[in-house]
Length: 131
Image (cartoon, rainbow, N blue to C red; front, side, top):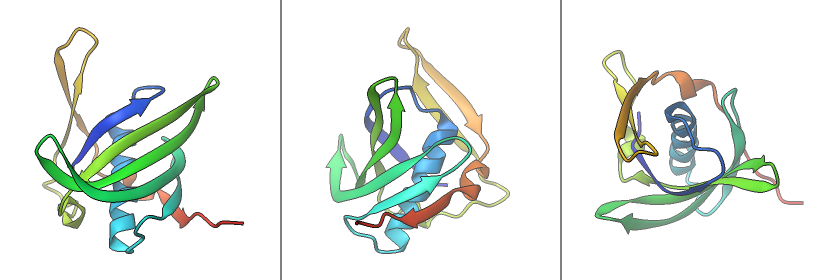
């Protein structure tokens, strides 16, 4: 599995499984050398477009920045800016893989949840074509 840090998001709070889908799309962007391009994706948990940004750093972490557009919630856009940490796209899911999702609750506590690392494997990805 990969490791991503959510930098900013607007709209509904992402689940760990939805972030796993975004991580898989981001890793595919890196593997296919799609620098600065956009990929459209479809999955049962979410769908939208992921744009690859520049490499950078955030609070001591280094990786590649991505912007995901997941549609709208009401009249507001549902977006997520996240960083896929450097070299994390090279990790492979195997039988020993354990993925843990950490999320700060509204009360300020940290919630921990194990998620299925295979959930994102069924994502369908294609390049965004410009008309």
